[in-house]
Image (cartoon, rainbow, N blue to C red; front, top):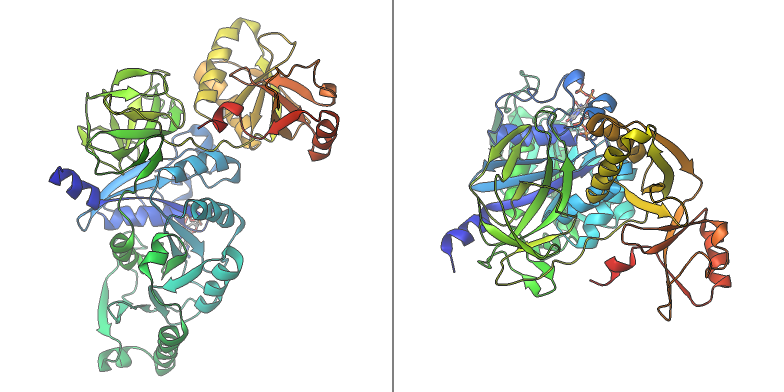
Length: 538
Ligand code: G4P
């Protein structure tokens, strides 16, 4: 086995930060970059409102709305590790995109606002991670101000998310008057000096033994006694640390801190890197693919067009699963059934793109995509062909009929919606019996329609007419005996809209589950699926 490959794999930590909007994901990401030396002054990326989200947002629309729509990838080194952070969009409409990003990570960091605890979006994202059984680390943020009691937050994790927690550190002080953290591994208390740089620079701190006189002289008696009581309670009655349970996502290591004031960030980063897993194997049609396998393999988890107006292009993001990636290498593209040359691969730090020569399992690489890649595609060695397990598809819940406002722009319109479909931003249907260019677009949330309209206008120069449809449920149709389902063979087809997906599979759009019940009752030999039928085969 190639020793240098193994060394590189062991160094890798690939994760996503998940949180409810405003819990502090962007700030924490920025502070991790600050401690990693990837940026020198925090706030150069984001601090003032006008600069918000500048790291992760490529699309103009995001800046306008102040939300993160697309995902970015950041890479930096710290303490001998190579860290890849995948940014996940915080808006609930983008759950599908987020879901795909979470397929490409080996662990997740869940950021929570100490005052708010578990919020709606935290719950959803947590569920996706827990279904994959990946390790989840919890960072309780905003400890510089009043929040819920640490013990109550532990209870909330257990009662709301169903996960037990193991505090790796514990705040010293209470109610926003926190002085430092107690590290339960080293048994030392780290006290932070006052923050004089508004969080722009790493914060100064000193460490003390828990029972040292020096520490007692620095804390008031009440704070010190409360700390001793808490520590004793945790040690005696708390959960025992069990790495095997952390590894399968049953126990979450919990950290306290404040991303804004750099309180506890370094302690979190170091402990996280010690405990987080290196790249994991992936399931494929040829069994598990180990990262140490010298034959290269990767899968596409995201496609994004025109990320930067300066480069009008389309990128496919791949996650490397095994072997070494080298610039200009030729790989087998399983879905297209041909060899392709990977020229001009890119890695990312904020908006600076670098051309890279080599990358390893766990790394994310952006490839120029002339329009051949699809979400979930496999790239592998020509001598060992296989397919990674397919990505789950979300059934669309919102539908609109769309067309080019100006019929002269038909060509650009079709090119635009087809590309957006390949990126996975929308699902495209054609109504049975209607003209070949009568498109119905399905999405999982309404924001995608705005993105669709905006991108068609800005990237393809096409104004569209869009009419929202009242349907909320899509079902792929098949007869048990394999006969073809057609609008005339289906009893009650006119109770909804009979459409075809991109692969000519028949689909029925209806208003609600009740309408679906009627269809099922009146078509006893019909099978209804909530994902495309071709997706079910793998
Ligand atoms: P997000 O990516 O999860 O949506 O959150 P983001 O980091 O943008 O943080 C949301 C708000 O919370 C920001 O304030 C940010 O400064 C603040 N924040 C983040 N970490 C901490 C912390 O540790 N303590 C306190 N007190 N606040 C924190 P904002 O006013 O919305 O934006 P800005 O003007 O600071 O940029």
